[in-house]
Image (cartoon, rainbow, N blue to C red):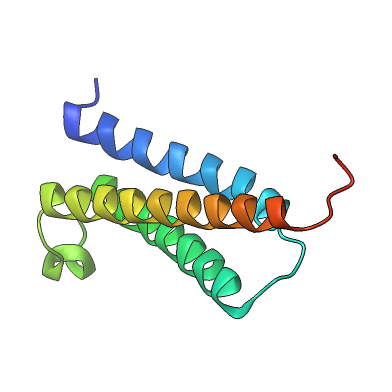
Length: 110
Protein backbone atom coordinates (compact mmCIF):
# COMPACT_ATOMS: atom_id res chain seq x y z
CA UNK A 1 0.00 0.00 0.00
CA UNK A 2 1.46 3.37 -0.96
CA UNK A 3 2.29 5.78 1.81
CA UNK A 4 0.68 9.20 2.24
CA UNK A 5 3.50 11.03 0.45
CA UNK A 6 3.17 8.83 -2.62
CA UNK A 7 -0.61 9.36 -2.69
CA UNK A 8 -0.20 13.14 -2.44
CA UNK A 9 2.48 13.17 -5.14
CA UNK A 10 0.37 11.03 -7.47
CA UNK A 11 -2.68 13.21 -6.86
CA UNK A 12 -0.66 16.38 -7.49
CA UNK A 13 0.70 15.00 -10.78
CA UNK A 14 -2.72 13.78 -11.93
CA UNK A 15 -4.55 17.02 -11.13
CA UNK A 16 -1.77 19.16 -12.65
CA UNK A 17 -1.92 17.04 -15.80
CA UNK A 18 -5.70 17.42 -15.97
CA UNK A 19 -5.49 21.19 -15.50
CA UNK A 20 -2.77 21.41 -18.18
CA UNK A 21 -4.95 19.55 -20.67
CA UNK A 22 -8.09 21.53 -19.89
CA UNK A 23 -6.33 24.89 -19.72
CA UNK A 24 -4.39 24.44 -22.95
CA UNK A 25 -7.58 24.40 -25.02
CA UNK A 26 -9.30 27.25 -23.23
CA UNK A 27 -6.31 29.50 -22.63
CA UNK A 28 -7.45 32.18 -25.04
CA UNK A 29 -11.19 31.48 -25.10
CA UNK A 30 -12.18 34.95 -23.90
CA UNK A 31 -9.34 36.90 -25.47
CA UNK A 32 -10.38 38.98 -28.44
CA UNK A 33 -7.10 40.88 -28.74
CA UNK A 34 -4.20 38.71 -27.61
CA UNK A 35 -1.50 40.82 -25.99
CA UNK A 36 2.04 39.81 -25.15
CA UNK A 37 1.40 39.56 -21.43
CA UNK A 38 -1.53 37.16 -22.01
CA UNK A 39 0.84 34.89 -23.90
CA UNK A 40 3.50 35.26 -21.19
CA UNK A 41 1.02 34.32 -18.45
CA UNK A 42 -0.21 31.37 -20.50
CA UNK A 43 3.31 30.05 -21.11
CA UNK A 44 4.30 30.60 -17.47
CA UNK A 45 1.22 28.69 -16.27
CA UNK A 46 2.00 25.76 -18.57
CA UNK A 47 5.62 25.78 -17.42
CA UNK A 48 4.48 25.74 -13.79
CA UNK A 49 2.14 22.84 -14.44
CA UNK A 50 4.89 20.94 -16.24
CA UNK A 51 7.28 21.56 -13.34
CA UNK A 52 4.65 20.37 -10.87
CA UNK A 53 4.15 17.14 -12.80
CA UNK A 54 7.89 16.50 -13.16
CA UNK A 55 8.65 17.19 -9.48
CA UNK A 56 5.73 15.10 -8.27
CA UNK A 57 6.84 12.19 -10.42
CA UNK A 58 10.42 12.56 -9.17
CA UNK A 59 9.07 12.36 -5.63
CA UNK A 60 7.62 8.91 -6.28
CA UNK A 61 10.48 7.65 -8.44
CA UNK A 62 12.32 4.65 -7.02
CA UNK A 63 15.72 5.19 -5.49
CA UNK A 64 18.46 5.06 -8.08
CA UNK A 65 22.11 6.14 -7.97
CA UNK A 66 21.37 9.02 -10.35
CA UNK A 67 18.55 10.31 -8.17
CA UNK A 68 20.63 10.17 -4.99
CA UNK A 69 21.77 13.78 -5.51
CA UNK A 70 18.16 15.02 -5.54
CA UNK A 71 16.58 16.49 -2.40
CA UNK A 72 14.32 14.35 -0.25
CA UNK A 73 10.92 13.16 -1.42
CA UNK A 74 9.06 15.53 0.89
CA UNK A 75 11.05 18.49 -0.43
CA UNK A 76 10.31 17.52 -4.03
CA UNK A 77 6.61 17.19 -3.23
CA UNK A 78 6.62 20.60 -1.51
CA UNK A 79 8.08 22.26 -4.60
CA UNK A 80 5.68 20.35 -6.85
CA UNK A 81 2.73 21.65 -4.88
CA UNK A 82 4.20 25.16 -4.81
CA UNK A 83 4.62 25.13 -8.60
CA UNK A 84 1.06 23.83 -8.96
CA UNK A 85 -0.34 26.59 -6.75
CA UNK A 86 1.59 29.26 -8.65
CA UNK A 87 0.39 27.88 -11.98
CA UNK A 88 -3.23 27.85 -10.82
CA UNK A 89 -2.85 31.46 -9.69
CA UNK A 90 -1.49 32.39 -13.13
CA UNK A 91 -4.36 30.58 -14.87
CA UNK A 92 -6.93 32.42 -12.74
CA UNK A 93 -5.27 35.82 -13.29
CA UNK A 94 -5.05 35.26 -17.04
CA UNK A 95 -8.66 34.07 -17.33
CA UNK A 96 -9.92 36.94 -15.18
CA UNK A 97 -8.01 39.53 -17.17
CA UNK A 98 -9.26 38.02 -20.44
CA UNK A 99 -12.85 38.05 -19.20
CA UNK A 100 -12.61 41.68 -18.07
CA UNK A 101 -11.06 42.65 -21.40
CA UNK A 102 -13.82 40.80 -23.27
CA UNK A 103 -16.48 42.81 -21.44
CA UNK A 104 -15.16 45.97 -23.03
CA UNK A 105 -15.28 44.59 -26.59
CA UNK A 106 -18.28 44.12 -28.80
CA UNK A 107 -19.10 40.57 -27.99
CA UNK A 108 -21.33 38.24 -30.00
CA UNK A 109 -22.93 37.27 -26.68
CA UNK A 110 -24.67 40.64 -26.20
